Image (cartoon, rainbow over all chains, first blue to last red; front, top):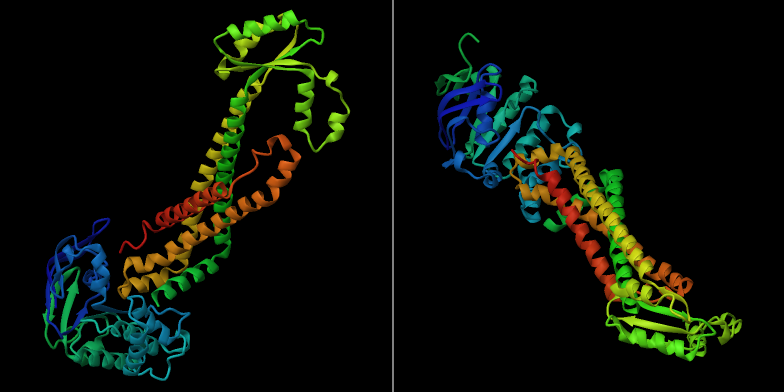
Length: 228
Length: 293
């Protein structure tokens, strides 16, 4: 589903973010990317949606080489890759329903589809009762659920989560992880960057640890790390 | 549904930065109005000079005490010149009749004079207006001739002034058109800035660039078209309310200030076309560098 071959990334000013990463992620996997700040986690995730392009090496997503993907095809790639962020990225002037519907409307889904799928997905993430609330009336965990609903409403093949629990307390984080686990069990590949030891240790999924742009550990059913 | 979405977005955007929108609309309106003015001025100049150039003739006013012999020799002289096309003797009575026809609505004008007050004249039509000075110099001072007059100088100067006016106005309207394209670009940039969060999310979930762009393009074109409509309305208003009194006030320019529906329509068409062009150019300027990721 995701394959990188010796991917390097150097930002302007000579800052090296990735030093030749070769990673294979199968369809349906749940993968944690861990490592200290600046280790290259976010850069790696950005390569998958072609938000950044590698300086060298190749990135394949869903069988396609992103380097040969023309610019106008990038939006269609992103429809297959849902994204969830630490800061939720919800529109404050739209209701829960509208926020999720927005994700469908702007890719041109017909109104009937929007009307059917949005309540369904909000039910799935446990917000079936809060369709008409605005983001600032929700708790952090609820906002993150809305953001996950928006990322998943289009049934993408891959869900990328960049520290989705970074702003949440441990109990709420557990709820979010249960939700991501449910989504993963529908066959969606999940790649999640995190700092959260407890979560990684309790989930016992594949862990890829980055340090200064190199893979220092790739372990199935791993834990966050020894001595950290 | 898509059409509804695009229109809704466009209107919201225009409302959100009303001041910039108004600035853009009025700049477009003013610059287009200047452009329309240039066109109308051009039509006026064309009409005026077309009428005048064919009418360029020399009038040799005769002394009241001219003898038949002197008159005949003047006519013979003129007839022998290759530059002369036609000679016409206008008697005092004929001059009076012409005068009456020139001002039919103002009887007090011709009632206050008699044929004897008007000089007889010989009118000379030339093969080309450029010989005017040469020919009039040749007959000026001949016995029996009081004064030689021609309109050439006035016409030449009029043409020069008109050409200058047209150039200046055209240059001004071009500068203003560039400015209005810039203002439209700026309006759209502000709209994009105000909505960068939404745009970020749209890109995130895979909205195509055109889907994101179209409301902004529409916004620019809409502002420009409203500007064009305003300037068009002013042109129509001038045609309806300004030109008729002008025609009454300046009877000798009656035909010059009369425009057919077709002429007005062509002016309006140019205004709307250029307006739409300015809108599209302004929007593309603003959108060129955004949506790169």
